[in-house]
Length: 149
Image 1 (cartoon, rainbow, N blue to C red):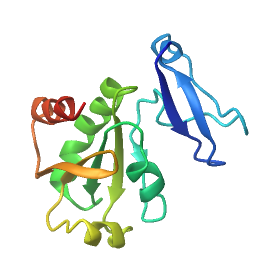
Image 2: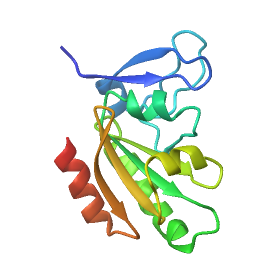
Image 3: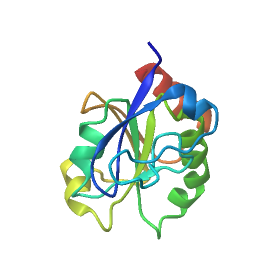
């Protein structure tokens, strides 16, 4: 049986099965219900999550997901942003990568007691399994994601 990835449509909320084989061919998946292009299913960009979407996108994610807690005024967060984007592209299909702006989403930041940013929280099965605070080398972040796989 070919491996598939479950991707939730940001427009209508439908769960879509995306064959891994299609992603590796470079095909861009669309929602089966509303035909909107799907993000997170092979897309190179990290998924943006909010207080409202955190439970659905992170805690119910079928794959491990790395959440970058950041703010636009934070210099180290801006330094880490290209690394996060590279990891999103490299890990597509095996793990997901998301970003949460702590200024715009204080409820989630407080819930997970984020006191310093950038903070990278790794979730598996809806639970936080690892946390890194501050700028980290790409190799270290990738190693920790691999460990969660």
